[in-house]
Length: 243
Length: 303
Figure 1 (cartoon, each protein chain N blue to C red):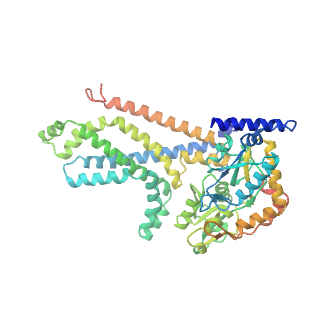
Figure 2 (figure 1 turned 120 degrees about the vertical axis):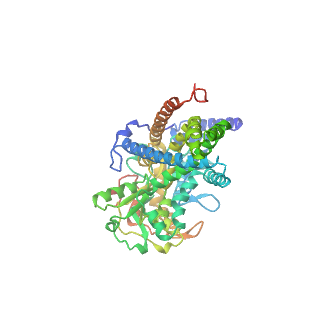
Figure 3 (figure 1 turned 30 degrees about the vertical axis):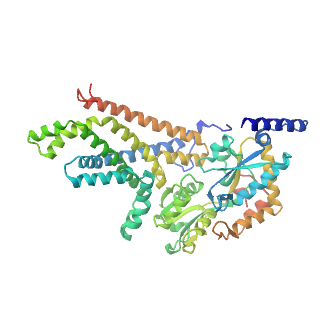
């Protein structure tokens, strides 16, 4: 290797005039966290609704949930973001399309919603698996107590199912954070995007991506630790995740 | 593989004996002599500098210059045969592949600037390009000032987006600057009215316009965001012997008038694969550069 290492590069001013190269990466990290946070909220809410639909006795609800999951899960995320960002505004009526295109921070909203919907299909499958793994008697007991279907889900099935699927949900959350990197394809300068900018400006490619890797690892370590605490806090004795 | 290597070693040994007394080779030159091959890095869509034609073969202005360098290296090393290997690179891979020795020359459209010279070296400038913007004729823009308050796109990580940001502050434009992943996507933003203008090297804009669905709809601004900046063919840093050969080769091509002929082949005539014509006659600055070749990263040195 004939590479000129320069770890001091992070403390040199970046050419955009926004502080040092490190500031550039940190602003990318902040954007990554914002995008991932919003995407995860969307994924949890829509994923839970769709996941529940897939376990309801109603055939219509089941098929809707099935179609939703297959649509969002089977198309590469990269393609989905491209469709949302470039194709959707073109097929809408002209005025609506133009409004969408000129929305401030369009790449951010598209990325958060796009990643959120993609991940929601995965959350839905997890939740469906969680609910199906509960003994049949749980649902029957809820009905016997006089709870309606909604109440049965609200007070019995969902609290149990969510606890059971907490470990896989942690990994879905980590995936959400990592998946935001795809957003550079629609021009969102999140952490990976800023690392790429840094390597284009300075040609210090290994330093840029080493820093990005470390920042991703740090964030994921924080998430994993926090989720372990949450798991311990909500664990039910006698169940898979309990002691 | 093993046999080839031992044959190679035997050959190398023979050469070493026959070359005894000649000065010791080092770095890239030694490597080329030992392996009997030189590797050129090319871009797949940097029209007309380095791109794939319809046979998936890399061609272009920078490729032609690189082949001239290959000839000179062959002559310098007194080789009967020099194998040319071609290796695709992107803006993200060109540095790692140069650093780890995969490619010996990068033949593309890489801006030579002082910051990058801390990492690599460049030979004599083969093109000069200023930062301008492309817009739809229908939007009626004229000067940089007309971008006030508008959405403007440029490619992330380029010198152009930096100049645009600086101009935005210096001229108080208040334009909304959005970064795009690559040139094609940035141009798409203008095509789909997501942005009114795309700021980029004028030559790249010319090739994007020439290749678009309706080239007549687009105009490239007269106003520029920068002085013309040099493009150079990239090589490894701290390899003075190799650089000397490469510099001498490119200087010979440019000063002999051959450089201008190659220029005309790619910029004022139809080029493969679609028979586009970029219609970009040689600039006075580049003509001067060809007369007095220079590898300076400073735009002020090209007048």
